[in-house]
Length: 379
Image (cartoon, rainbow, N blue to C red):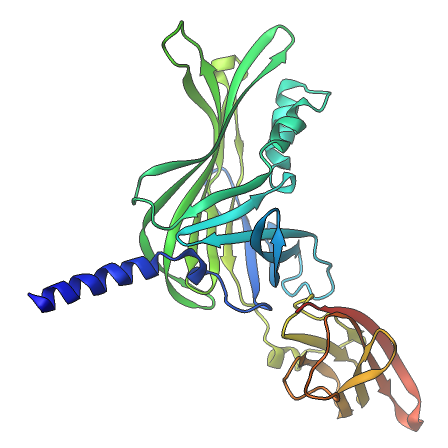
């Protein structure tokens, strides 16, 4: 009997621990996610010619809108490495026991807002202000929610007018948790929490009181996400979506889908060094901002003596990363706090902006290439 009770306690405790939302997010700042973004046609076939890439970087933990938040920087582009591209936006996550929150901002609502504004012919800021009212923290990821049971994250009703046609509409964000699923990715196999998030726009059919209005869906964009322990989102799938406006006599159309997969760049550092290099280049460090470490890449088209150094904002040298002769090719070095590379006392360096500079000395001790860039340490 005692053994049975002990077993039950272990099972209850294990289940509770596995549902803790924060355990699914990386523990340390500096974590970088690289995603491959593949558009889907109307039949959900991948359009490989239109593939783009996205890089997210866990920059710091901060206080944002009255919550302790994980600040993630994000950028996207055609290059799978994205070394030189600036970060374009920020994502904020927050966790409280079994709940995972995300801050909803206008940057995430612009597509829906512009679609609705065009649909209703809004020339004022009515549609924009309606969507802006959604801004704030929302509990998207409910790790302890009953499996297959839908939950409402956000729901708002409004009315728009097209000429003399009055459109009562309801916008909702709905969530659902599914059974855990094991998936294979570029960075390994994970048993993931699986969620769907649906952004739904419905037309409200009204009836005489006390009958409540009937919501008829006209648009529902469903995003399925797989969340891996200590890695957060490793996969997302949004199928092509049919927008049915026949109820309003406006026909229907399809919004192409998108799949997002955690991604390792197809060319490794070692493979890069064998490529034919036609120019000199110092890349932007990644992640940036960083804590505790970051990587700096550069390429050389000719053999030469390379010096790569780090300076503080006052111009004082604090680290020598490279000081040797190197062949043509691609190279990458790590810089960070406490990794033995700093030529400063063990107390380390403070948060702030730092400058790294490369210099290549050619034949006859003549500098043939110099360049410098900024990076930021956030503790």
